[in-house]
Length: 121
Length: 384
Image (cartoon, each protein chain N blue to C red):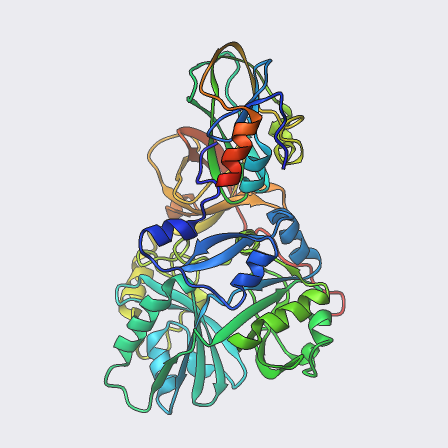
C-alpha cells in the first residue's frame, strides 16, 4: 500500500496535491474493489471543503466523493468516463478525479498521519 | 469517499448484539486474503483480492468455486412428506424422480414470497430443501408451523451439520471428474447423485446460480475444508459473493429480498413456470390465481442502462417524464457485456422489449431501455 509523501490526505480517504489535484487513496481503491463508474463534478462548480461533489461506484458499492478543500473545479479527469478502472490501477496518477483552483485548504493530514490512521483501522 | 472503511458489517452487527454465524470455511477465507462481509447473518467472502471482475470471468471462461455453506438445509421425510411439500411450495415435488431436483417459490397465503428454494428427492419418502441463508430461521418457523398436526412427516434442520461448495464454469465437469468415480457426463441438469469426492461422502448436484454448467456439492461440515482445498489445488478459483451476484444477475436468476419479497409474488417476478396449477391446493394458490385472472399490475423486466449504474430501489420513469412506473430490484455493471444492466419491477404497459425508460439516479435521470433477458446465455456446447 502506497502513501506518497508529497500529498495531503483526508479522513475520507482522498488525497490533495499541492497543485490542487484530487483523487482517492490506494487504501480506498483497494477497499472499494473494481471501480466501474465515476460521476465527476462539473467544471466551474464552486465548492467548500467537505462538499459532496461526485460518486465512485465499484461493482459492489456506491460511495460519495467529497472535496478535500474549497475552491473551483477547474478540470476533471475525462478519461475516467471510459476507463473508471484507472482509479484502481493508478490511484495517485492516471486515476486522479478532479482539480481545484483558488484552493482554500480544509482539514488534512500528512502522509505519515494518514498511514497511521489507516493502520489503526 | 465515505463508507465504513476497515470496519466490516461483522463489527457493526456485533455492536448491535446480533451474532454473526460462520461457515466451515470462514477461517480459510480470512487466511487467504478475502474481504469479508456479513450476508444473510453469516460472515462471508465478498472477493479474494484479484477483484470481482476477474472472479466473474473465471467462472464464465474456466472454473470457480463458491462457499455457499451459509445456505440452509432441511430434511423432510416420511410417507406424508411428498403431499406436505406439494402443499407447502408452488412447484410439485411429488413429481420428482429419486435423484432429481426442482426450483420452487414458497408463498404466503396472499401470494407474497416466503423464499425460493431447491427441493431434492433423495428417496421416495425423503426430500432435502435448500433455503436462503437470510431466510433460514424464518423458513424453519414457517415450515414447522405448516407441519403442525401432520402425520408421517419428520422435519430436520441440518444446516449446521452441512457444508456446501458450488463449483461452476465450463471446466467444472473435467475438474470434478478427476476426484470422483461418479460419471458426471451422465448426470443431467437438476439431478443429483450420492458419491465420493476424494475421501468425502458428497451429494453431487448438477445445479448452480451462475448461468454456467456446474455442480453443487453437499457434504459434512467437517469435510468441507478438505474438499475445497483439493478443488483449489486442481485449479478451481475461489470466488466471492460479489461475483456470485453479477453472475446470477446476468443470468436473470432472482435473489430473495430483491426480485422476490413478502410483497412480490412469483408471478410478478416472472416465475409462473414454477407454479403448478393442477395441484388441488398449495399455500397462496387462490391469491395467485386471482392475480393471474385480474392481470398483473407489475412485471419484472431487464434494463440496459447508460450513463450510470442503476441500483436496487432507484425509481423508473417513462423516458419522456412523468410519475414513477416502477423500481429497480437489482443492478450492476455486467462484466461480460461491459454494460450497466438491471432488473426492474414495472407497470406492464412499459414492459415491452425496446420500451425507452429512465432511471432516477441521485436526482438525475439516466436513459434505460427494456431488453430481453437473460442478459447472458451460456454458449451451447458443440458436442450437444
